[in-house]
Image (spheres, one colour):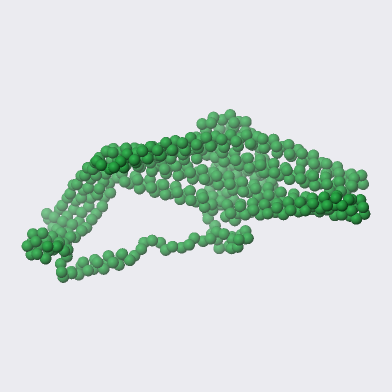
Length: 482
């Protein structure tokens, strides 16, 4: 005889419950999807965002960040630019959300260590076509209970190890966010430096192109009267063409640098500032080179690698605990009756206590493989940690060595530029007095402009070296004497 549930004549209450279940089944709690607004110019050649584009609130800088940014460019407040960049940049915002995800995962893992108290109301009916079976097995029961369901008693520390691993991964994500923040601050300063240097290079290249064109005009006039040969004229033409192409390339480089700065900062940026201020003040690297290398352990990227290593170490404890019995407990207490009207009558109380112990016997090596996997990941974490330390040491050492050399190169190039400017002044005085040809004056001016161009490049390299030092020591608490 096949049993069936429910009476042939459907009561009104089950019909209502079924209708409500069908109605709720068609509902969705997911939010309505909306495509995010575009943060790009309307055309491929555009450099300005539409006016309707939203501007996120700036992110507050830390004292160390504010101090370096404020001293980086004298006479130019770059703090608002960096703050807007932190609020706009997609990589940094993604790092923030990854921290929030890791925090939520840690809270979930912590909650698993505590029992979950739930309430349940149920009604069950069982009816048979056979009168004999129906008289013996027919059921009609209404229960209302509250209790703990399937709670694992953590005798062997499996849940604690999982919670520790989640906590360390949360800490790792926070250190990763700090590392991403330092890299972004350095990137926006680097983009600003490249744009300012590209603008200065463009101005010098245009000046060289103008003087080369003037020199070509003079040479062409001399060629007409027989004072210059055809070879000299063609050489002057080639130099003028090269200078014109260099000026055009410098303009393209400046536009590319400006576009990079606007992309990283969200297009809302005011460009100004002197290139000479970016290379000063000079940082003394002698005191930094004498610092204890253990200070590098404070860097966010090294802390991130160490936290990931601790998480992998906690995973080993969880994998080991899987070899031991799992003890789970389910309890409930409430009231039960054969009808809703008698649910709260005297004598309707009910309770249950259901402990459960499970021990894996034949898992075909699953637990052993999970333990081997945990150990392998832990050993890989050790290698990643060592790699992070070595990379940090090399980055700091290279930045210190490069800064000392670039500072000396910038100083010598500045002295050469000063001498070149003085030569131009003396040549100008002689040309005014009629003691020198105008061709020699223009040629000397071109050489001075080329010297100024070399000085701009030296200052650019020195400013980028300052940024590299800031990035290398980001998150490291240096002695107050430095």
